[in-house]
Length: 285
Image (cartoon, rainbow, N blue to C red; front, side):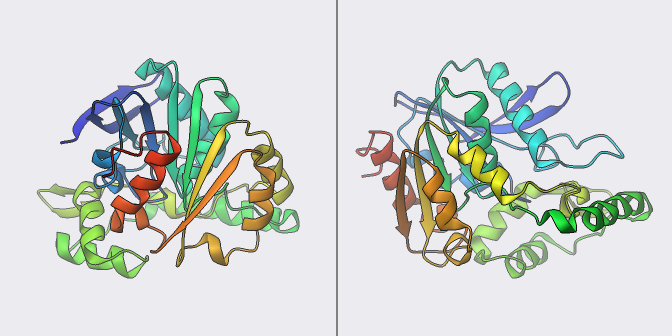
């Protein structure tokens, strides 16, 4: 069973779920955009590890939101994760991320190079890059979005099932998997049911890295890295995937049946690949 924990950083309070096991590794898990720690509740118990912590990034799940008037910059997540590792007190660990979490994990490894034993990317390979020519318009639109957020009222949800249907409809998730995320990702109040996540997460990012910058960061990764792709996922359709893979020096690739959230819908297959990679392939039997 997962244990809910709180990590008080110097600048923000983050929530997480923790699993204890009998393996040798500590594993830090980072979820995808608009997801939460519950996205790992099927995968984590199948991994052979001494301790697993699924961290919820700022604005997601039960974690604190960023202050009013502040954007959610991708690079700020790296500082959040580094600070969380210090609070956990881990000297060495496996860093695993899905989608957005995989992008954050790759950049974090560059900061904590000697402490990250291995990297695992699930359906993620760096952040979405942007065309520099479109940067001025993108920044202007992002600022307008931020100025309008204070005028918006949170939208009440009809029920957990209605929220799960909405989540599934807006992604590749099956209803059961969507229900898992929604249960942790909503809050019940006297006035009804609402999303927990910060609505600013849905806004356009004010600044995107160029593809050349992403290549530079991926090329700096020295850790042994596993990339788990889905046959019906997002990476197989992106034109940037091949070039990004070529930048990572010590990359192992596995392609499994499923969609973008295959770690939720086919956890045994994903766990088997990860356990083999970290040298604990007996755990998924």
